[in-house]
Image (tube, rainbow, N blue to C red; front, top):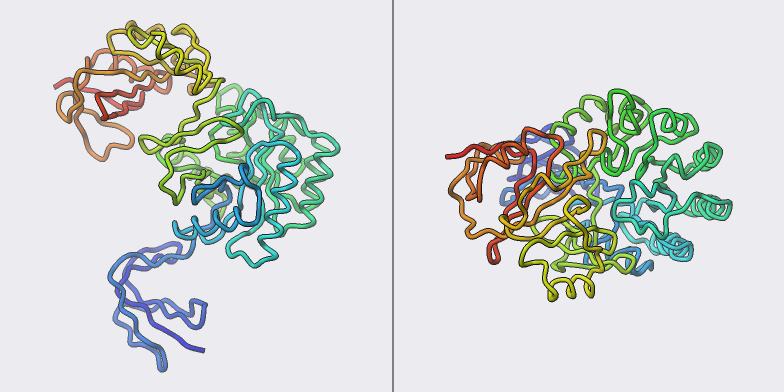
Length: 436
């Protein structure tokens, strides 16, 4: 069996990153040797031009990639395309994930993954079904028309899938499945993961006692941690037998919350990163459809534009042309400032900003995002510091007082995006603003 010694790159072994040499025999890693180590007898020395050698990542929540979504075309070919896209991004083992959909689509997704595995498609560990047994109050991007409690037919479909697949993960809300159903799934080897749930602490603990052993994208789309009602977050952080997925992209979860999770889930595998990737991963596409709704990529994030997102148009933006465009392309309801999830207009037209929602102590995410057109957008002016900013940066702002007052409300407050021509800048509520 041939061997080669790879040198010239840093090596990450799961715990440490640094110089070294990697001995590969056949298709297996035989050893990590010190830098400068001679090639063993019979091994070919291969010099790399820098970079990092690391084990392939494992991603247990992958909705799409390579320009396709599992929901849109649940076939073995789609599964292979998604796996290849993520292999190119470093994730060599994935759970293709189906977002809430109709029962027939779910059945086709199960068949697709089983067929892909039988065909020898590399990197497919099984299937993740995220929904449809979720909470309407914490639906996220899931289609509310398709969310429903678990019935007998649903349970039978899941048990059949568990028998056919090497692994099956099912994300459900404790309030949409009984403890008996959770226990039945757990006995069949299903990884029951709690998520998209408004359940309180006691209900979450009951689901864990019944056999749930994971949590889906911790902190997102679940009742938060409160001092009187710890909620689902409190229940899964406290329980050592529950492993938690986490989207640590700097957008979904605040760095302080990530640090809290790391302290609570210190054991190996107790906290695992997921991408929750969509069709755009490993692709140049800028948008795609999910259950008939458009999702677009801009500013390093994906945004759902659908008919359930209340929108406020202010000033000149509130005109017939814009209203007609919104009605045709999105169908979003046009509402007053107090009901809006998003508001669009010039900074002057959006005043007073106190009209917009800033969230609630238990649900700070139930707040407004203001999209403000400004007269200029440059890297000069107010000094900005805070999460996501290494030291400090500067941005021309229409004023500073409103944003300093907004930061004082954190974790409540509004978020703001500024536009000028084709330029865009974001100012989240967590950013500290100082006038210069």
